[in-house]
Length: 328
Ligand SMILES: [Zn+2]
Ligand SMILES: [Zn+2]
Image (cartoon, rainbow, N blue to C red; front, side, top):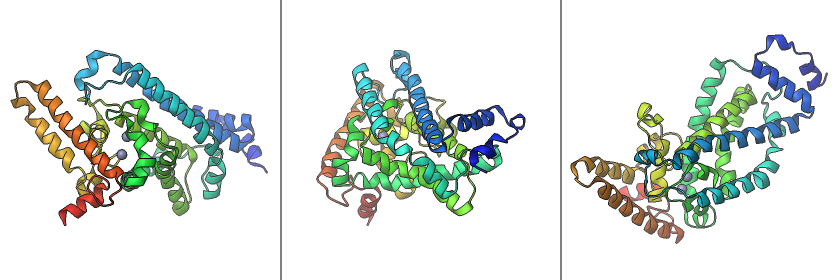
């Protein structure tokens, strides 16, 4: 019996709304490779741009400037449009063709795709947590490699175009970078299913949606009192990654802060935060913060030039390695 015949015999009355929709989609498209590919692409576009819209609105409202990490650097309409065009171009020319391999690779590793019902939350929550930690560690080391001379110059420099990032800039990156860092997002699920033999692609979608939101929020440029890192201190958030763009060095991980803390690659960030904390004792707080930001950025420009010169082991070109070398 073919997969479609098995699916066609499903008792739809026993499924929840989402599972019914899922089964109907695969039955309607008939070709599982196209069904998975199309759904993955649409999901990516809807989540990516959907999550960016609130940040575009927030950027257009001066009221929110009080929580902007670099308040003098609000993206212009032209910058946002230029970034959108590049991201769309990259989605359609690189990700769309690549996405057609997703279903065959998923099946090869043994992921459930068209099957319903979905796993229970007790099953998928620990899996998603594992993917978060796996990706964070992968990203931490791969990102530092991208800061090494030739890799930085020819690949990662594009992503660092914005010293004050905004939501849309999350995927503003060279295709090779998209591939390298995307590996960290998908290698976790593939590794998991290779070991435990049980994983549904719907769980991978939940993970990818959360990861997309994390990446966009980390680039948003805003730190609100209600931002996740104030509730869950292990979380990186925009405050952590905005500093990476401003200072060029430090804060290489994505979701969590602990690796940068453990390896000492957040030393400059923490020194900056300490200085910033003395702000309340200063009369002109705006000028004080601006001066501090300028200093960090100036240092960042110097560090970027040093990284581009390709000296492996200099502090700016390799965070963890550089920090280690310095302490020796
Ligand atoms: Zn970087
Ligand atoms: Zn970034």
